[in-house]
Structures are given as C-alpha cells and as structure tokens.
Length: 195
Image (cartoon, rainbow, N blue to C red; front, top):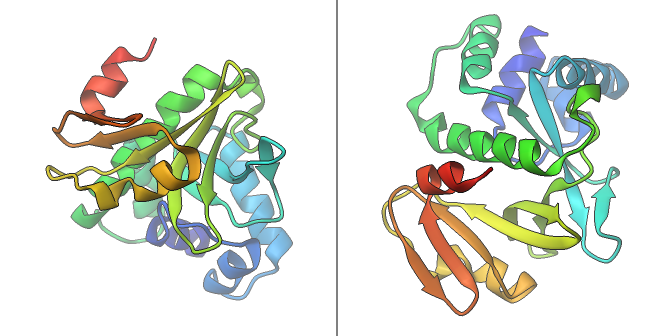
C-alpha cells in the first residue's frame, strides 16, 4: 500500500495503466495493484476517472485511467502512508481533484457503491496526447472542462476543447472570459455555482 500510495501521489492528474502502477509499486502483479486501487475507491478514499469514448458516450476501461484522492485531506493521509511530505507543486492537481469530486457529486447517481465505476464523469485524450481534464454527461449532453489553476489564460490553454468539442469550460485561478462557446471562470466561482 505504501508503494501504491507513493505512485498515486506522484501521478496525480496523469493517466496511468494498471501495469505501470504495478511496476512502479515494486513489481507487484497488475491485478493486485488494480484490486488495491479499487478497494481505496470503493472505500470512498479516491476516485477512478476512466477515459471517455466520444462515439459511445461511455467509459473505455481498457484505456489508462486517472486517480485522484477524494479530498485534499486524503492526499495528506496517503502522503503519510507513503512516507512523503506535502509537495506544494501538487496544489493545482489537488484543485483539479476537488473539481472532479464536485462534478461527481452533481452527475453520478450510484455513488453509494463507491467511486470505482463512475458513469457520468470522465477524462478525454486525443490521439495526439492532448487532454481534457473532465468530460461530464449532464442531462445527455457532454460538457468538457479544463482546469488551469493559474492567473493567466491564453487560447492555447483551451485549444483542445475548442477543436475537439467546440465548446466547454476553462476553470482558472481568478480569470473570467468568454470566446466562441468557451467560457472561463475561477474555480471558486464554479464550485459556488454548482447545486
């Protein structure tokens, strides 16, 4: 568990495979790594974000997945288990995780079963490895969301959303903007506006 926790913390907001996680966790079996992560997810400690298949509008479980602690406090607990200290460079990734948690609370209907099988909250990556942090299915519509926890937002920060989805949200540290179907607002405002 210590090695798996260390790897999860090192790969926040980065897609990884069960095999990669297993190798980085001391060469354990991929199924063992998967079972540990699913146990943590079904215990409401972290959540598993699957790749979004645009054509089927559902998860692609054979693709890499992203793992997030459900709460920043759980990040600190996992850091304690992994014998590491808080890394301030992780702050934007933790903010991204908080956004994902808020999206899950508003889109998922089966959360009483744990966080290992989400059906409405995903991430997406193009064939050129350009990523959209979250794609949520809300009332049958897909909504792409990019978290850029920074004070400057440029068009390059939302090019992937614009090209791949034509619309979406960019969540920043403190910037509001609107451009051709792309809306930007601070993370704090977005979280406040969610029901």
